[in-house]
Length: 218
Image (cartoon, rainbow, N blue to C red; front, side, top):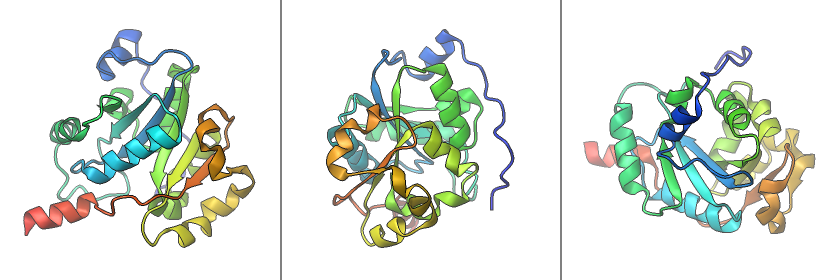
């Protein structure tokens, strides 16, 4: 269990520093940007599919992959170095609208709630949407300051095989049930004032990074 201490201050980034972290692709005011966090150990077709689905269903301009320095809920055993994970993410991101980044390293944030708070302060006119799979909605209440995530940006949850029932009957879904949008309204999610979230039913690739590592190790 991650201690629920207050969010720590993030590292101030100059415009030049932010531009470097985003490979020069700083979004214009009003841009709609999806954020997909994770270890990307390694990046795989599942990450690509959820990103493309988000671009299409949410009418986003781009999706940023936030390659985590170290997920606080995951073991360091078997975790590839950050530079290696960034490299595989860049190789896997076939769509030019998908941008793998080391933003959390640049910001000095370890928790999603802190990262989102930092980004919305740095880019207050950008419309951010946090992207996650249904499996993460089941256990997001274990994340540090998890309610702050829903109160900071809009959230899009993508169905994954066998997870939908548990996800929609879980603590987070029930806590924010009144703020759930109809799936038909997904294209306007980025314009909604948080808290606002949508559950998108789609057939995503069940592939996972854990499976890839197990296969490659075997």
